[in-house]
Image (cartoon, rainbow, N blue to C red; front, side, top):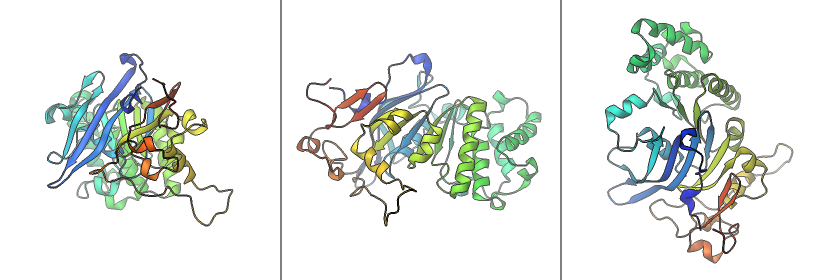
Amino acid sequence: MRLIPDLGIRGINMDDRLLVIENLKIEYHSDSNVFHAVNGISFELGYKETIGLVGETGAGKTTTALAIMQLLPERTGFITDGRILFKGENIIGKDRAEMQKIRGASISMIFQDPLTCLNPLMTVGEQIKEALEIHKESIGSVEHIDQQVNQLFEMVGIPPARGREFPNQFSGGMKQRVMIAIALACNPELLIADEPTSALDVTIQAQVLNLMADLKKKINTSMIMISHDLGVVVKTCDRVAIMYAGEIVEIGAVEDIYADVKHHPYTEGLFGAIPDIHTKVSRLNAIDGLMPDPANLPTGCKFSPRCGHCMGICKTTPPGVWKSGSHSIACHLLVKEGDE
């Protein structure tokens, strides 16, 4: 019987895969506890493909992204197992100088809150220019940098003249556009977007998502979209991975996740929590209970304490994997006895 680490590996040719994550495990250590943040996840990303990582706060989505960037806290965050293959090369264990050549140039990240990510003492133009100068060997001479900064401003819909302004002079949506410009400065092959619209109002969210979709087509980059919003994912992603308590419990093409009749109970709960504009209700449906304590995870299926379909085996034994084409679900309900 296949276990959860096989959930996201499709077995396509390595030449077609930009990123491969295999059995990744990550822990955070405190003086008194070990927190199991990511517990053996596997997935892959092809060139020009977008995958969405979806789940509640604490599911391990951002920790996975920080591991790819090799930005886990040095004294408290540790990768204890697995591999992260970028263009066929394992980047786990690379030193700071090696990763600095990769970050920004080959892999970039848009963080959740532009308010805390932008330097308030530098103009936004200087911050984009800094991203270019770090990798100036790959982008041309210093004389061309100002021109490239202006082009990046135009690409994200900001008048180049505003490059002389400071972050506090920009709205939340405009700050996020600056963050996108910084992330795309060196045409990265992989863009990680960590809840890029969570701090924005609904109208601005749509503008930023449309901008990212247009830019993705223009520069042919692959993307990991991290979100708790299934509506955001369906608009931007080719495949979706549902994460819970540091594991991928379901993964498949967008069509599988949104149209298939079979789902993990947690995925069903996420869909059930989406408001229906055609139905008047006094309150939204919610998944009972809370995400488990990562320092004391349940035995067996991590979702079993909150699952309305929980059986005895769910409390003691990790689930096998049900598969149909590109759609995979780790759940005892769907795995028949004798399946492999």
